[in-house]
Image (cartoon, rainbow, N blue to C red; front, side):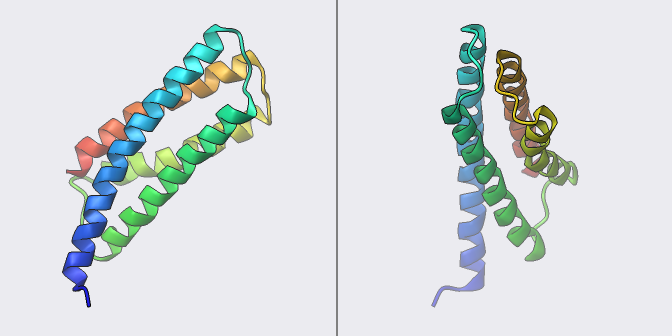
Length: 129
């Protein structure tokens, strides 16, 4: 059987690798959104689906982080937890605020928010070390 310490090391590594995947995904998603907005396109189902995948990645990251936190691992700074919490609620909050708007203006809002979350994810990585 696997020891608890080696299991926690695996979870730490998954948390680290997933954070890198999240920043790349958010950068690409944000750039895709900007291109769509520049082309005067609205929000389509494919873009909403990609945002759902992005949110699921953040949720998975938060679950892994919570497992590590409850096991006694501490992030580099408490602001790491604040960044993570903000990242979890930002997209659902924006979606609720826009109330299903699929206009070009909404596409701009989503693209800018996702690029902002890209920056939040970068900062979260920097504060978690």
